[in-house]
Image 1 (cartoon, rainbow, N blue to C red):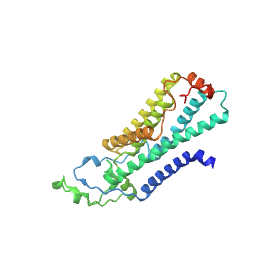
Image 2: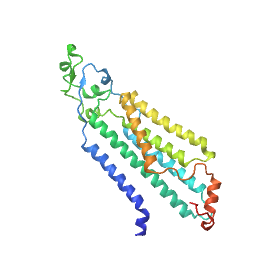
Image 3: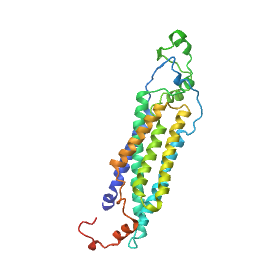
Image 4: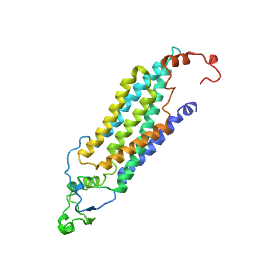
Length: 283
């Protein structure tokens, strides 16, 4: 019973993550996009199909792997630097593992909420990708769009392309790549801002934060470059990812573990002081 009480927070966190993951899975399996038509003179969907700079599996794998060494290393550094001779290796390593699981678990939970928001937009709006006509390959386009009705809006489209690829061509808004990359970047930046605040590592910390933001920006730009998204799709995705990163780090998990102005020596001194010698207001 004591073990359950000790770990019930992590168990509840795992249950929430699995619940959100189930929603994402069911949406991917059962969801179908709204079949939107287009204007005959719409040149924004006549781009060619080109290879992707960063594919969906690549951005997913990278996004979930990058935070692991960063979070683990920072938590190790933070707890080892503030530990005292009284702390056993077992207690320190246990604290590192628990802190890592909490921070990374909430990260995964937020990424699930981010993906649900993206999927809802994609399936509801059904915006056509810039290369839609290239993957659709309609066999009746000349009949539906004669020169005298260039601005006509048509919905009766018969695509001859692969059904799965055509369905993907209707999922332009918002950009999932932009949403996920900005979510990861801002979540980790906030984590570094509040957990790694000692002066000795200030500039490497800033450099890492800048690198994460540049990576998110490059990923987003590549989607426009590859004709996978319209610029407004990428903008919406970046806003969604940033929103969930801020919400999760601000309201779901408390990133502030100690005073940002507390030095390592002060933390060691505080932890080395016996409990009965600390004042009544000591934490």
